[in-house]
Length: 293
Length: 309
Image (cartoon, rainbow over all chains, first blue to last red; front, side, top):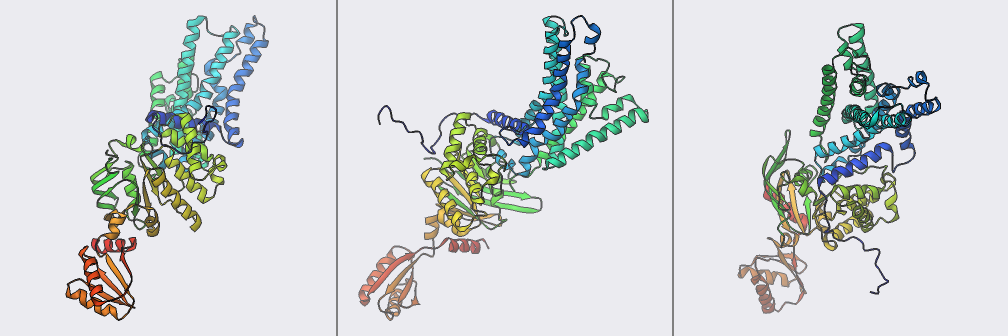
């Protein structure tokens, strides 16, 4: 063969290169799921909901930063109207809920509906590593709306001298934002996967998630404030629990939502208990799943 | 020389009240092995055990030299699997599905991308590989399933009823592809099927599963030749058949007159050839044809059933 001629199409051949092991499999499932949940590499209609949710999550931050940019630097009263980080969650709760309810079921339901689980479990993946990859993917996507907007807010506030003082203050605030966002995303991930694990139909998972979200909110609210049994009962509400944790991590140590008088320990234990309960449900559902028939 | 691909010793598996496998003992070697049995015989159960997805209730199973339950991920990394049912997401392009499966079997991203195209091309899908799976015909989807099973160059390919839903032409093409994978690409294949002729056409060896038992197992040529093999002698003169049968019986060689000048001789050993030659020559009979009749897989299957009972 001459120096200028090359064979481009070699066809199927044996492979003796490196094989990357189970963590590469986890990474691949993570990447594939993130793409799927966000509608990437799919038709435009699959992108509408996730990108609307992301837009709704970031829009208030962009608006507040824009307004601050227009307000004179010495107009302290006007600048005080800018929301705190924990207050910001109040603006984007709907966007986060939208993401959890509509987009997250996309991570689990189709694999069971199309019976692709048999292909996944015929690989180096186990049920546990498969679920880990799926959970990481949903967690990653949720972080886009639980951490991203607050980071944008932090950057905007710092640039407009409305943020924490000095590098240490900025770093501390950054850590709080990451911690709070991660806590909300973890809670949302466990909740979304638990609902999605109960059915292979996305519509049912979404409907179920909405019913559980509003149902627990009503039960928590009635128990805490109508029956006046205990203020802590509001932690039964899945709308309140994650955001109360986030508020206490961020800048409202005494509470940022309806659970104001509830002790920190109760708040964190309640959120942790919810997360553990949802995770356990997912694990139990998948441990007994028959995949090859 | 590499050892057997699968070794099963007294493997048992129960699902609730159903005993899916009962003391299944067999060895699967290199090449294409048909796993033959009726629906519900325990074939899919056996495949799940080979994949290490479930633990046998009893016995010992070795796949590629390892216990598939203990070394599950490592064993499965070297196995390609195409399930019986539809398992492909309909809204994803075939190439993306196959590349993803290559990646989860440990191939680096760029290699996975290239090999996905190669594997799909190998099964006869060219430009169609960029179409969503849901827009493909049943035959094309079966090809995609085969492509994802071979994309990572596995040591063992498990195909569960790969011709399900195919018309006769597509079925022939799929069987030709399986033969190509096993013989030309050199991958060891276990073909699970309830269709006897399908297994007979492509397999080098067979394991017959019946009601959870492995009733027959071995190389196809050995099974066909084993026991009850017959020598069929066609004579010019129909009347000569009686003469030949009498002469052979005097020499204690079992034979019978099948009519129209045909004598069927039990081929107990090679000495029978000499006996037939000598008696034909002594009687001065004209021989039109003489051939060894081996058993069909159906006869092997039926003999296995009889043996199991």
